[in-house]
Length: 102
Image 1: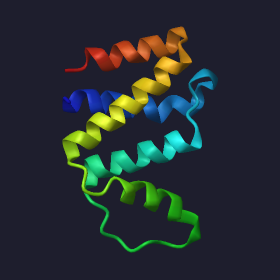
Image 2: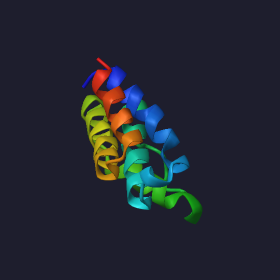
Image 3: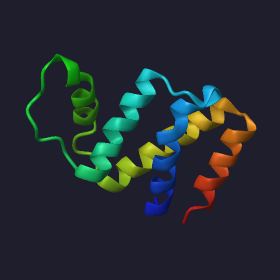
Image 4: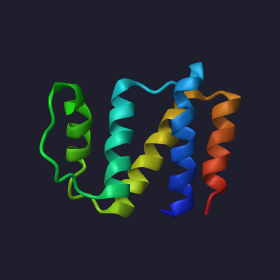
């Protein structure tokens, strides 16, 4: 998976909550967070935090051991799945942006 596709998907995912038809679920948000952190920071080697941050920590920790390249691929695939499910013109434009990235 090209770094450019990951970067394009990351930028698009940052804007998903702003668009009603493209909203991601809480599960999607945690999945994306976990694989984003794995792709950018590697394995989670921090102690488990208090209650307010456990879900994010658990999401990142669930990706532990995944190579960074594979984490990028999984992240992009989930963004593509969210966009494909929306099926509207805006999501199709975002899909084209990801496909165009090398």
